[in-house]
Image (cartoon, rainbow, N blue to C red; front, side, top):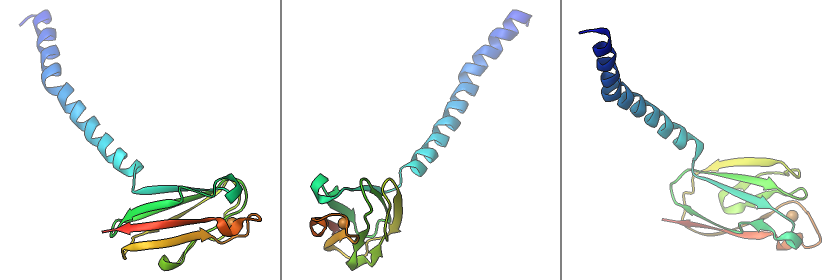
Length: 133
Ligand SMILES: [Cu+2]
């Protein structure tokens, strides 16, 4: 086997074995990162009712599936309360967020609302949590 044949042989081995192995490793590593970057997460934006209120104001979750609520106060200080799940973010300053992780354990329709007086129409700042089985 001369030098040219050796280079050709190594190139073919590289294409047949090394490249698929690298692709396999890369792809599996990517799968893990994808899973880590996308947990079951719901982002809820808090605007005063004059500017739209909770967005979304209807959250649908699956019973028994651990979920992270990411609540962001957009324009002024808000807090999100879900009494039936004993959840209260406490005040969230504008531009800041709070994350709540919980597992819905009871099916049904539950109300959530803002617990911080944020505007003259604050009492309209409500939403619905629907937990399906
Ligand atoms: Cu409010």
